[in-house]
Length: 330
Image (cartoon, rainbow, N blue to C red):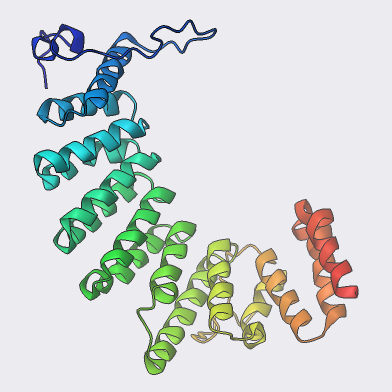
């Protein structure tokens, strides 16, 4: 990098005099030209210049870094940078560390994560665990960032190493303990526990199922109106082909207007809502209505759907709950 008193424009740098810049609007008179900064126009003019000649060198890395810092979404600069790194045999580990702060600053940028994916594919399994550590740091900045979670799933699935999977549940549990409503963490838990194929033996599967049911019920008890936990319960039951009706006893207390007098009695199998819970819980009412519908108790299901539309979830009354009532009546 250059010192503050040295020229910043590539057109002013002696070592770039041999490169002919390619201007964006050369021989063109656009009706509404984009007003780029002088620094950005200069850097991209020279980027087009090296793309035209196919140059791969250390100075191209300097150039692409400048363009990326000015515009992290410039996918051509990212691709040129990656091809240059490979062509000159640059350290890909050093590249990751250079790009760490850029990734954290621009978490929602597609190119940032695609670049890291290309690098990890080249580096191999030895780079996977340090990358998981980096991702843990980046998720502290934005705990629900889609790109970061998606990339983490790719990393686990691509290398598919038992040592990488081993600590993932502890990591997810810590995220959920920190924020029980972190839907991204719940989604990642489903991926790790059920969609990854890690638990394939029937005995192991039964043990995992019991553990996940207990974990989910406990978290619903802590925050009954948390959609993430209810959605996880639904997804888990559907995935394992378990009838919702098996959980009628668990769901019913959450559909009441107040906590039962014996709610303080410890029931590890079906933990009740706490005395601070906001009841009734619309998510539990919907769950119970689905149980009634599946068991053929349509009048009971209809009564609950109408209560949701009229009182507990009025936003979806006309577009959803009335539709459920009509559909069940057919």
